[in-house]
Image: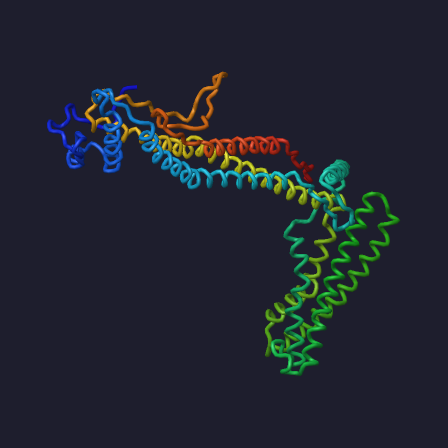
Amino acid sequence: MSTTLIPIPPEPPKTTVAMHTHFALSYTWKLAKRAGLVTKTVFIQGTTAAAQMIRFNAGKGLTPDQYTMSQDSVVALARTYVQSGDDVQKNGLEKTVDPALDTVEGLQSGAKTAIDAANADKGTHTVKETGAAYSPAEAYAQVGEDMNVIHGDLASGLTHHKRTPTWLRIAGEVSPFLEIVGLLSWLTRLWNADVLHPTGGGGLIVWVLTLVLVVLSAVAVAFAAKAGGVAHNRAREARAEGNMHAAEPLFTKRNWMLAVCGVLGAIISTTLIIRGLQSLDNPRWYEIAAIVALCLVAGFAMPGLAYAAKATDGSLHSRRADELQAWGAQVAETQTQNEEAAQGLLAQATDLDSTVVHTSLPKVAEDTVAEVYTAVQPYEWAYVQVGATNIELPACPSITAIDPDGKPYIVQSITCGLPGAPALDLQPIKTRMGRIEVLRDQRETLYQELAAIVPVEFAHAS
């Protein structure tokens, strides 16, 4: 192929320059630099090769256009650029391609972890009230059974399955212990006990006795209120199911617990009223009414909230269905999050794969080929220096070829195209392409595993 890489002027200088007494060359470095023809490195390499070519063809009666370069000169010119091309290939792969492929591998490993988590055994959930453990499938079936019972009873006019509002359930858990504030205030004043300083006031014994009485009273009221509420709830459920034999003892238990709450509430309210009135001098009627009302709230309304929260809190069917449904929703949400995480990681891996294949790796290959092909510049300059005017240069090599089936593939090595020039091994690039194919196969498998995930399903408890 006849071409020119160096911008050679139409005519060389009229006066040739003798570098040696028996070698006539066309350019000095000064002239070549002034004309902007070649770099210093190409000038030195090409001029050295030209001097050797003149000696190699001397005495053969040939014109400069008929000169040939010795095999040793071609190898010497090309070897430097093959070695440099190998460095370009190695550095480009290590700095741009390898880190990206490592990242792809890490992303796919993370996706595999997320997919395994989405497919993992979801374990079991133990219902607090019954102690029975359920797998997701068993929970799904149990919720379905409970909802059938609930809907059937609702259709019959029974309303005992309805749950208490969430705010009442929360208030019922907290309210009994709010009495601690009032009791603590009354006892500390009564016995001169300083809560913040155990050894002060009435002494350590009084301080301990104060706290023990306060805590015991609060715990007793809370226990009695909740136990009475639970007993009433189960009794009304048994009555709705026509099982009065089970309902009657539960109603009796409820009555005893309410009696305990009443006695303790009366004691608490009375003591708080007495303490409140003692703290006032000549109280007015509305002050007395306010103190009495607040003390009654502390003694009876607070335990009453705890009782109401339990007494009307649905049935075993509705509570169990709600608990299992809440667990199922959490399991399903976790599975969805893992699936979405896997999809996101695989999408990132796919995008990065595309960047490597269409940008990073082609850039490395392009720079490597360009570096190897640069060897033709000093080759061409050698012919310019001896005065040749018809210079034949090889075409730029390609790292790909077409197989018999018409499919492109990466060749094993490339040369600058000069006769006898050494080749650069492209196995490092082929190795990266092989790694890309392996990662793609893994990613395809992961996509198939992601698509095969069986979603967790639960009947809605509504």
